[in-house]
Image 1: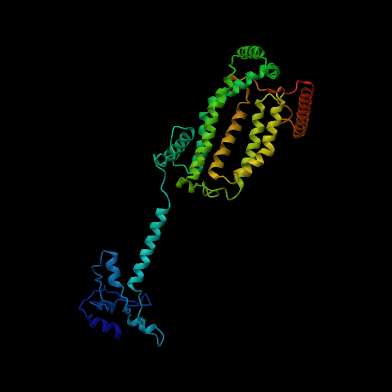
Image 2 (image 1 turned 30 degrees about the vertical axis):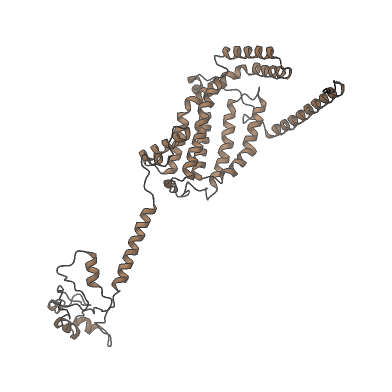
Length: 424
């Protein structure tokens, strides 16, 4: 049987005369009751009490219809309770207590706010980079920096790598592209080491000729230098070929990645790695500057093996100053740069150091026509910092003594030389 409230709902129509039908069902707290199908089958043509009604046998197809039909800001729809529910509830509990629904305006506003939030989130995250996007931003050109940016776009779009690994792959790729120029530099340096003592003697002659302004002596020295380079099969300007090719693109990698980070290219805000989320900002962890300092120190130590420090000891002391305090000072500067730029510099330095280690192998040197490397000085191939300190003090003393000698010579010339002439 139905409760009195349910029976009244069955026999009552809406004021506007609209009726909706509910499929027959019953509600029972005891699932095995034999009367579970009773009463519910009689629930037909139950009218709604709001301004709009819903036919549950033919439900509406749009969310707007459901909202307008099911929600009323002024009326409530009491639930229908079975006799079993009414009998099982404690005394004083209304089995058909009215349920107040939210107004339609509140529901609609909540849905609209949720949709707007999702749309804003989608619009705020930039899509993947496409071919031609960097050109549209004016970042592609025939300069070394423009070519570097074009290569990064090509790697990112074609492989789908995150931007962190795109910058790493780009730095490695450009070191491989510049490998022939590096081989040329290694070959030239190894052969010049054979004539380095003679070249040092010619440098002293050049300095003496410059002091006396002897033009004939300068010409004779140039002829002797050309003969020396010809004896090893190289040109005096052969050593410029490698740096003239490598230096522009090394600077281009720096400027190319730097401009992408400072513009910025929106995709660089998502690096693809969790510990370095934004490549356009400085490293928040402070790890990259420390890694850069260690990498720079190691690279200078490794590449020193290609320098003939026995005939050019000054180069070893200069490289010591580059290692320290040069590396820590450079690390402090790198701490303020975009992390994507620092990553590219670290990778370039690592690849350069690994390249120097590979070219230490005798078989590799023989294959590319590079003469054996000079014997290293000491354990690391560079003078100790104690030797560098002594060299610096001795150099300062020599320069000070030379300045005093020149001052004394100038004083004697002014004292015994002819005085200033008078103009008539």
